[in-house]
Image (cartoon, rainbow, N blue to C red; front, side, top):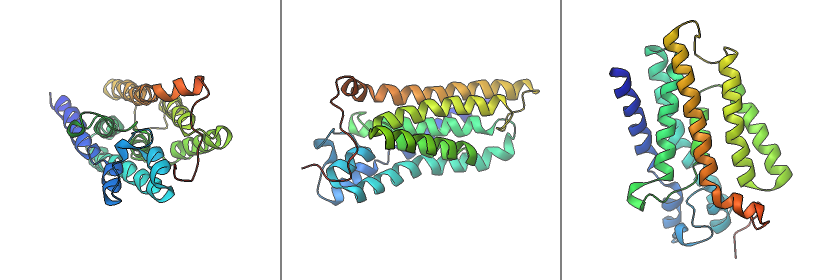
Length: 224
């Protein structure tokens, strides 16, 4: 019962952090409602296209930190309480932050796509090798394709593959000799998969544009 309450609490705390919509706040500072320009999305890519590189960077950092900070706190707290399963609670917190970003109740549940926040959640796991691998994968894909959407989708799919590989090679916190820890590992893989599925679903329009060769390529200039 206690563990169920902790899971729900992590989700709720993450969701509350996720409600801080950096794109909306920065846009208002510049006198622009980012929801009414470009793709209407609240994330980094639309901020970059509508308001320029500085805005894109600010929104990216803000959206990343609002997931990273609660995940970091969860990591520190649960690492000592549940040393063989703390990453599970970090992922619950990260999932909550992504849900808050993607579906903010005060904006009619119309938010961003959650990639920057997902990146913050991944950083919150505090696994430098996993982060390095995923950063290299994302950078290579974007440099080759010039599509941030493709890089984002590949990033999240790679995260699941990487997470599973690390988990089954005993490179994460889980102890597969302990039944409770092994169960937590499987549950955490489900959460990692949910993050990836959510990212892909939120990129449905991008996937459609890619198939019709209508997707915008990455540009460091404002839209006219």
